[in-house]
Length: 245
Image (cartoon, rainbow, N blue to C red; front, side, top):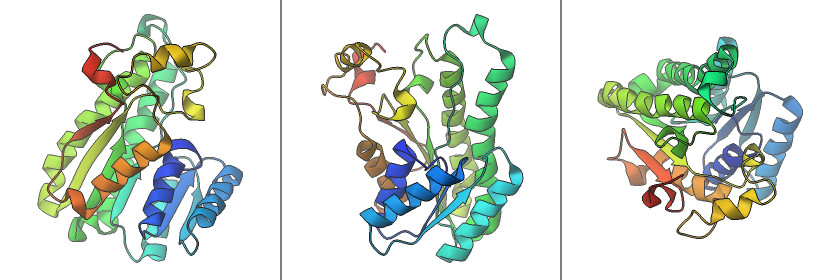
């Protein structure tokens, strides 16, 4: 479970632990990650939780995290790719290309790297489930977070390609496209009066909560979705049904 020190990642890790999974969580900073592991143990007494700090862009860290999953869980059955960054706002014509490369490296290339590690570590022979956290910004243009949206569109395409490639190995690969979820990551999008303006665009009349995404991820990771692969599930309060962002 990558990017699990807070927000959506922490919510998904907690839900998976609640359903009996031995969970390995990753994040860049050791202290918040350790605190997240303790939060999961408090919420789910008896849960097996391992914190593995590191940068998802680091090949050695990816190998370490997957190896820890195999050691502490007896194998690797589920991979949740949740790490995502968005340092670039505004028009692409003004975007710093170095920052855009970093977005794609972190949001797409590192996710593929984790899938490769999981494949080699056991999924190749035993099957498994991969859930990639994308975004509605990867489905419809926003004009505000264009580089981030382009990276999430690439992740959705990656999901479909891998579902086809890995299906014969009994590996399912799906994605979730959340709209705005009330997390620290979304704070700039809902600051001040922006929150009420954002809520007005949702048919269900509220923003998302981490639990909304966590339950969807647990469904796609588990046996209830055994014949679902290559899909991107929008968990968006109906936002995409409105025809506007």
